[in-house]
Amino acid sequence: MLKLVLPLPQYLASVRTAIAEYQAHPSPFDIHCVNQMIEAAKDNFATYFQDIECKRQGIGLLEGHVPNTTLWLIDDEKYVGSFDLRHELNAYLLQNGGHIAYQIIPSARRKGYVKAGLKLTLEYARKKLGIEKALLTCNFDNIGSYKAMSSVMHEWGGEEISPSLVDGHQEHRVWINTQPK
Ligand SMILES: CC(C)(COP(=O)(O)OP(=O)(O)OC[C@H]1O[C@@H](n2cnc3c(N)ncnc32)[C@H](O)[C@@H]1OP(=O)(O)O)[C@@H](O)C(=O)NCCC(=O)NCCS
Image (cartoon, rainbow, N blue to C red):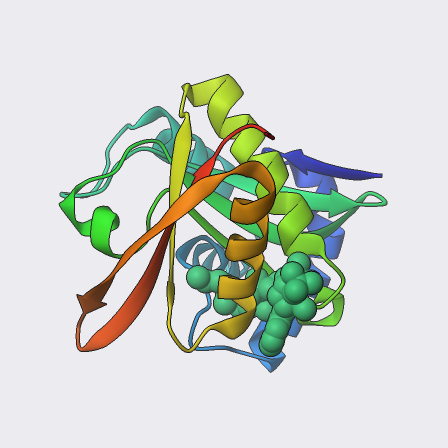
């Protein structure tokens, strides 16, 4: 069964396998919360769960950062990907980053996981944070990510807005309703 959960130590065995995969197949689009997880593995996740809980509660945030929930996509009790949900947008996230970022383990790609996980994250955003429309952005070169966000936008409703220019590259920007049509 597929589910979206707050990170829990009970999934660490499959997370360690996932980290080895991520490290063996890095991509230019790897996301912040996965890099944080990879860093955390170096000291055996000593402060990881506390750190992400502080980010969720908005405690001790870095300048310019907003509260953020990290979620794990679990299939058959094993970790298959991460979703990062920002609770609000600032000027930077409006251009680059948006509300939601995601990453699926390389061996589980092209099986529909990101589309399924994105829908669960949108539902979570509505139920837990009251977000009615979520902004998603991705680099023009990231075809898989753009296809996934466009597909869910067409299914659930939303709109594509003008791309933004960030550090010399263009970012697609898509708003998606957080509940099905
Ligand atoms: C981008 C990423 C999240 C896609 O995850 P995924 O689980 O493989 O995606 P899905 O299987 O749900 O596929 C979504 C759609 O994209 C297409 N797709 C996925 N990867 C693709 C690729 N590399 N090239 C072309 N199309 C691709 C699928 O065919 C599907 O199309 P459809 O809606 O027409 O059926 C995954 O490749 C990944 O983790 N990449 C590294 C991190 C990243 O890029 N994160 C996004 C940052 S914006």
